[in-house]
Image (cartoon, rainbow over all chains, first blue to last red; front, side, top):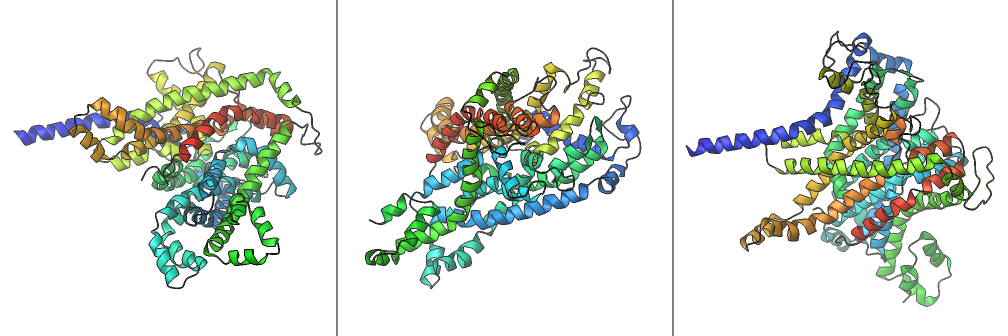
Length: 284
Length: 328
């Protein structure tokens, strides 16, 4: 008798939890589902109200993807996005990793305040900085090129990743470094040969964030880059695929699906690190 | 001690000054000490990041202050000091007050909804059940999707004629058919535009609230809770004296972050309505962008963006206090 009631209890509990979660799942996932099905629907199927719209009423099509790659700059935008992200990741690594190490490990005077000061700059919103930065970009002759974004995106990736690396380096045992010093490594040698190799996961995380945080930007891309072939995807799609009042919803959804989904999945794996990062490592 | 000269000057310029001074004998021997070597090494490693942030965040911020009190515009690069003229003319614009009010309404209403949704989701995700990892991964998608991309998906769902939301409501009999009086045009009706934008912000960030809350709960050590239980603490005592003090700092940081991001984000409103119709959904960042970049009036745009600072400062200040209390 006992095991059955126990089992019933578990089942009942599960049903209650799933029932509670169902609305959340629905509101979280439905827009993505809608995005996906729109991308594969034929236009006559898309623009009608008499059928149930949640499934294909006509055969699915790849036409919207073809339009995207053959008639727009979408291919260029993807390449731009990747190149920008790669440069931003490189700049971030070269600056944030050493800075994080110095702040976490070298017992510098005022390192705690310096660390917080650098992190706080992550919070200075782009909407306050974009007008002066537009002047900086113009005076460097970078306006109308994606290089402008390579210059400005590190303003938020460096503070965030420095903070992240700071927390990370604190978890590397001091003894490893000391052992290396005893064995005759210099300060730089200990950093490069001993600390960096064991910090690879942290460094990888920084690269991912340099990429995903760059993808979250819209304002800088909108303000600094206007030629059609220089834009990154999140800016190119809404500004170039929407022409006046004509919306090519099939192509627009195809465009955002193709880039948004991989980024969302990638970010998903690192979300806990992000939360840990901003809550200041209070969470172990 | 000579370290004092370094202590006050973490900036690379201070360090450079020390280096360039022809070192007297005593100082030279100090150079060789372990501490000095460590500091030189440390500040050298720190310099690139500090310089980048100083040059591209610190300096632009100050420059923004200057723009706000100048008559700078795109056509005329030579700016003159005009005092508080930009602020005064902003105050005389009706649209400025509308945008300010909308920004505050946006922030408060969105915060209420996302904390309600986030808390319920967090409590559900605290339970143990099958498929938890998968469900969690699916539920956080709105937050991990790049913002410009998810907003476009909503723009399509809010379409004036082929809105899927309206399709469902119409089939349920809650609204009439297309073209009838009761057919809502989400982004085209003044009464609906701002709520529609707020809904997208809530949709995007409620998973964030939930995850931050979850992180807070998992930071509470179970042994402490059990010990308190053994000692006869009631549920409320345990919540009041153990759980609340431990999760509060984390919650606070999450909340403050969200405040800063929500107040300064322009992408949701800009992509959905551009602040329309008739300024019904205009918020300060959108107004600052339109005046600063589209109308080319850099000074006035900067002044309007600066009006966000008094709203942001309390959040930043509290955040700073919370971060400083963090355990090192």
